[in-house]
Length: 232
Image (tube, rainbow, N blue to C red):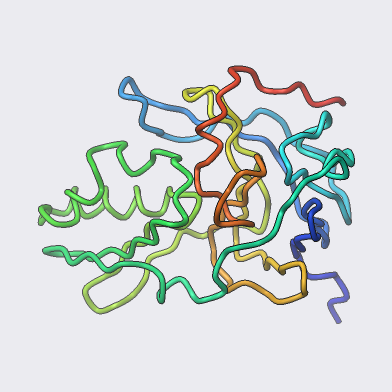
């Protein structure tokens, strides 16, 4: 019998994210091309495995990515995101040989959608195998899950992702990126109600999102230029 606790993130009221279930945690930085579009990730560090830990949600911690209690100084973290399933909020884009779903409110400006041409143009104009593969790759690389490639028979294409969390750093924009949840880790609101499960999600860690707990790229307004050093 499997007695291992399920991997879960719970949003604490006006506080941090409580992560349980021995969820692996690491820190990644975006790799990018000459146009500033993302091409992949560089590994920065892996954090020690813990059964339970708390990640900063207010953006003020001096021990990022972990919470240090700074939210107690007056963080208002009311959740505003919908609990509706992704397919009910995403717009449908029809293409020649492949379609796409686009939930714009989830955008974290990770810039994988422009790596080899703008995904929206590729979907609508492309009809060769190379272009279709590019559409699928760029959609699957979107960490927030905003974009999803859909086959003509209605199958949504998702990458295979292990259940883990990555703290994203945006060296191009010189700011801290969101918290990337992978592999369908469940997210529960402050009242214990689960959000619709998704394979790829990005959570706000600057405290400014208007779509809490999810990232809405508000961190792009706060470009301080340096990543905080995280104590060993």
